[in-house]
Image (cartoon, rainbow, N blue to C red; front, side):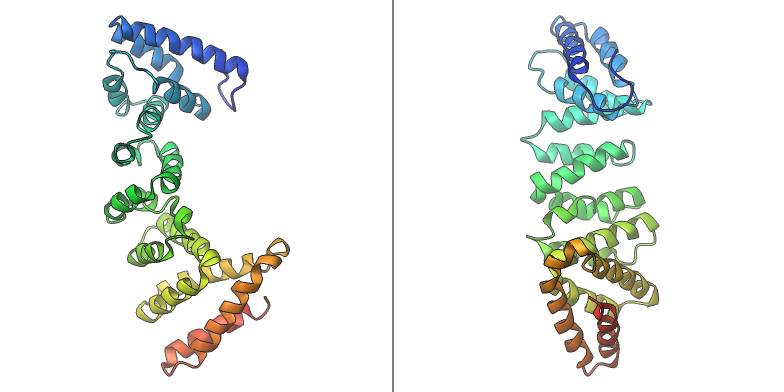
Length: 274
């Protein structure tokens, strides 16, 4: 019996391989109903690692059985483990076709949230151009979970595409959902760590254009960002960030706009102990 929780060992993998071999044989014989029941038997589990490994193993099937149809129907199943296994099947099946993965995530971001987040994170690393194509429409969804998911993993492109990330965040700054706001704060901290100059330029504009609620959110994020560089293990990496931050603060203080000058004084106080 494959373990109900935790990472799998060699014996678990052997059991799963034997189970998958039986599934493939039934698919090849046209016994789709039996194959489906065998998949359900293993997929209906609380163990995340079983669901992923089963989906991955099913994805290599090259026979004529109707596995795509079976797994497509599984995406709509009432049991979570079965839906999650199907998502992993399509993820590993279409590694060379990331647009299919993105369209599958569109169906599962709310019904299979944990696995969808994992795959979204990987997609921002492996196929950022596809995520840049699909995520803007997610960010405008009426579904807050979908808006939150549009940001998940975006920190993976923070260093090489900071302006895209900052522009994306800028459109969502005033989102009313708490989880979306948490995600915005997380991404902003990550891009600020790697590209502080571009981040400060956007923050200045956002603060001057926004209301008090937006200002509170941004300053709370800046506190998180600066606190990272006050940690002992970050001291060797903080010199450039602190230098840029001080220059930015001085520039803001000298701005003829009183509101911008006030921002400069607040930023200066925030970084004075770094």
